[in-house]
Image 1 (cartoon, rainbow, N blue to C red):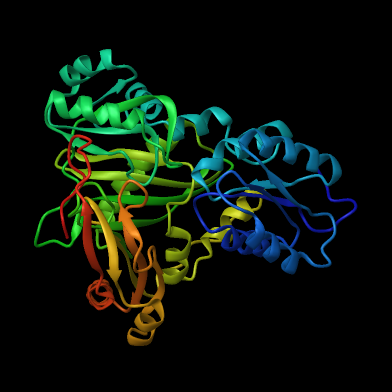
Image 2: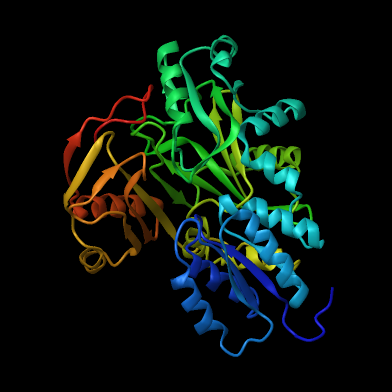
Length: 443
């Protein structure tokens, strides 16, 4: 397809929930091409802020529109109608929940992108495990659970203790370690009643062998990492290995350190493991985030995501000056990405977990105070204001922030000082009813 009426390629951004904020995503898309249309899904929130940003940025840009859709089916319809008015050259999203409509649009219009079937597999842990078993990709022993009748056979196949998780979930929501039949039954019952945009229903849950990913003192690191990759027409470029901070609150994420402290031989084995998983699923285009456990038996794939991992677009920009978000948009347009440069700094991205239970935030220092005290602080997001209730079934963290320094050790030390300075004060509201298993303890 060629641009006849307009010189710039036309990129559609699908936004509305998860991933980069819609405003940041718009900025990244426009760094790939100034001609960006938006379809915003209003099911999770209003479009006002990103519409305002789009109008300000797109003033004078012809052949682009801002559209809203009520739901995911509406995204596809809006995109196909837009293509009739102003032909599209690419579709990009930074949201896990919007990958399926993105794939359907690109498949129907013959644009660069992953096959819808590959995206479905990437979003379903149950399908991933079956695919990995078929292709010999190293991953944990597991069993799918669809009804209560599957609980006993799953326990027999996997053993106890084990890890119970939603097949289609994000952010470690609904993940529990279970040690008995009663805990597994309670976790399964609670998961069926879960009401979170980060837990979707694909008809299955998983029971998996527990891998020793938490890490142990005195090491500050967990025994799992993620591999960040970018695929262009089937060619995989592995950008970086992201080290993870030791897990001290069950399976709730604690943070990321870059660049990795692992040696080059370990990097090569991780890249090989990630590439096996990517190939098995059939991903051919765009960003991929592969989480891998470092087990005594070698690397084992925890999961593959057909998108950039959470904060990684921002983190790779800070650590190496690499505009990952814009490169993802370029690849969506069928344009090759630039090479990943050598790191120029070290960073620690810290996620401060909410203790298990229900709490009221009674006091904390402000973001402005923390930025004034710590010049190494790149970005800080406080999830709550004093007086608000904090509990893990709505969000898992009190704060997220990034520290930039010359070395990994310095970045981690400053991050610890920032967390102490923020001085979160919590008072318990009530003990929640147990959902089975453990998600973590008090800080």
